[in-house]
Length: 576
Ligand SMILES: Nc1ncnc2c1ncn2[C@@H]1O[C@H](COP(=O)(O)OP(=O)(O)OP(=O)(O)O)[C@@H](O)[C@H]1O
Image 1 (cartoon, protein in one colour):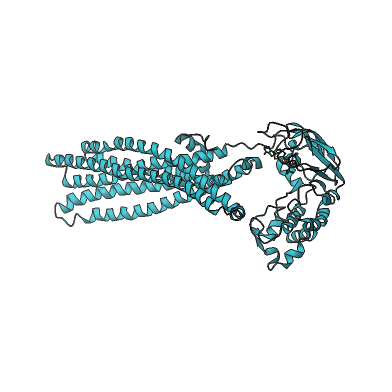
Image 2: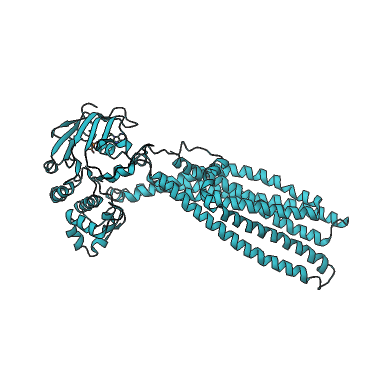
């Protein structure tokens, strides 16, 4: 994914994300106005300083001090209030933008099929949703406001400098193009390093995610040191990229300061000449010096902003790439929502080849399942059984033939209504961090407590759940910590019962369980499948025994009968 990361211009990134600021634009504008007001107050303060020098200090006249001093104090307080209001509004808008952006990216990611995630490292996707989203926020809202206020700051002070003495002002402005050239050079180099840094950040998050998810394998095979070395290698590359960026930053500041000092000295020399020629007062030259200090600040800020934006663009590119990933399956424009299916399921001459595969997985598969019928599907490993399940749920669409639910092509149904009508129980029981109650209730939005308990009773889970100290409120981790494989599977069955879908797809629900655990699952599975159309992928004779019909997948075809199941493993089925 990284090798193909597009290089986007600042303008393109900005155009892409600016629409997301829509509801906050007036607050951003209000915040910017307040900050611009604060910059205006600061230039009035500098003017008052010049007035005090000329009319009070130089003349030794205390009476002339009070008015400009009062104005100065007044504008200082006003400026403070404006800065408070402005920064608050900008920060609030920026955070709201960040929330909206993250929700948008996450919402989009959720539309992508499971295949998308299987081909990518989860950690890298997480880094894009967290750190890279932050860089876009820095770029679009904060960056923009800083740009506006720095520009106005420069404009106010420049205007006042021109009023005071235009020759001196023009001399002072020579620094601006020099700053621009220096900044451009630095920004380009920071951009290159930042691109590498963002990619490495994704790598490190992915490495950590993989390691923590596979901690059992790591420890069982004594690979802790290898893992540490992998992290150290990636960390060292990250360190080099970070140090390189820090070195550029550390170099930028003194280069700018030296340029600034040279300009200030030049301007003071010119100012002294102007005072000597009687064209400028002492107060004027002192005010000018104060202006220079104030004008170079925003000018330097503009330069730093250019460098910061350059770095942020690289994070934005990674978000744009994610947003540009097209969902493989979407609702067709004329999709209809199915209320509750009766459960008539049919595959008619279905053919399917995985996008990167050389050979088809399914060829001309035809299956008819009556409402309420339990059909077991067996076949060798790699024969294509799970592929049938994926096609039923529309994680992929067939290349040939049609799949119908109650006689309607599933491609004509909304994805939401199709998946609401089909409940899935997989081999690996996926849990969320939360209570057992939450995990069972996940099957249906708004499931009530009594639904959860009833489902648990039917799934033969109520007994062991009630014996836990916290019962249904027991918190289980993402991997169902504290529960046995069989118990986790019974929770998954309870979840499918809560879903109360008319169609069930069970993909090897007992594959990872021992004989006794499978025996305990037969009863709950019977109760779950009663009255529901069920496709049960299994190798287990104890499960095929409860099926109304057994089909076998072989050579890409589905044929009736319980053929002997061999694990073809590396060799694959004979037609491959
Ligand atoms: N996302 C994918 N991209 C490419 N090929 C895939 C993909 N998923 C599965 N396959 C291939 O398609 C074939 C069928 O896979 P499938 O998972 O349907 O087999 P299965 O019969 O369920 O096997 P098992 O019993 O081992 O789970 C296999 O050869 C597999 O390598």
